[in-house]
Image 1 (cartoon, one colour):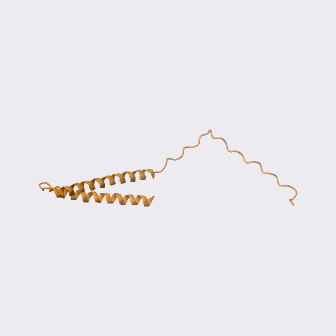
Image 2 (cartoon, helix red, strand yellow):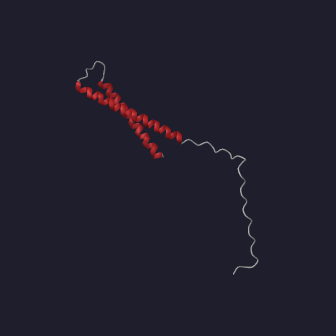
Image 3 (cartoon, helix red, strand yellow):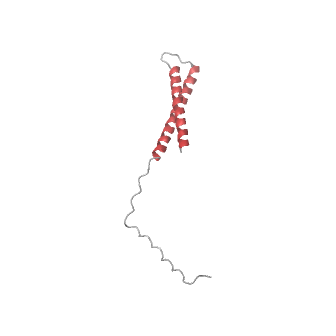
Length: 103
């Protein structure tokens, strides 16, 4: 379980870094006053696609980690047994030892 959680944490961290990189690159490509040529349009679209993928991965990992961590909480204590339970069956009486030794 710990290994799975650490793997999810790694994927979540990787997605966060990817979001930051693609967000910065997109901001660089679409600076106000900058002319975007036909060649750069494909770069903008690719950057937007990668950013959307990184956000989707982050959201999925965050949801999964949250669900796993919530499932690790302690279960509620068992409810006390009710008085209507049947009493335990008594053990049969022990047989008396024979007075004559066996052959």
